[in-house]
Image (cartoon, rainbow, N blue to C red):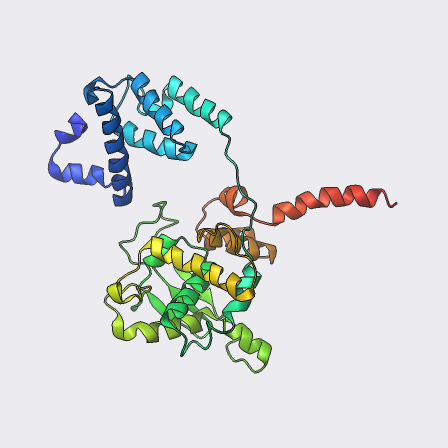
Length: 345
């Protein structure tokens, strides 16, 4: 059911208003709205006669189906974009809906799994040797995985932004001491603001002139080196100016999706564990590279402001609440350590 006021507006104005939501959001809302319409059809309720009781019944059906609170809120957002009840501009402000969500949260409190789920040290150690090296002759699949992982871990950016990186000038620039990347100007980040838009991604070099075995091992993790090999190996098959392209024969040279890019990163981690003969973590998410990268840099003494700028968090609270690993655990362990040491004096 479209907003009557929106339909009455000229088409060009409608287009601008519709652009307030990203295409991915509109697709997600459309799917969820269709699910809600199917629910109404089963209950013989026409959309124009929907009440708060009906919406709560739909939310309850989602809860009974095992959906999480965040998923239920997404459905509610989709419905809220079609309905306004009374003077409340959003269903989230309805008193009964708010109490339902609060009650669901009390009955099914969110839980987080222990982290980090995988060892960055183990993965990096395996990326320095076969089958990932030498880069000039390794399989294109492994070269792609390694390059994708190194860019992800050294940039701490989301997969969507990394997939929007371009391989042509001036979007990629190789310097003596760094490589600078930038996403296509049409790319819209998760948060559209002056802070988040059109930011350079500056990646480091590592042991550029290796003379010892240890320096050569470090140089094998040089992101600039990996990108140079990757661009050279994919030059003849490219069908897109995007930096990361598919390597499978069916889609070779076409831009990779964020889902497939994330799979490359998680596959890299799984393979490194297999090579090390260590049981792989139960569940590895590529998005965890943001937390792992930011936390590792923070523990190495990088200022919090610089960590947040690199990962495009405008507020440090985002990192502290949702992404910081290890440092909190060490601080908490300090309490117990102090108790034990007090008994020794």
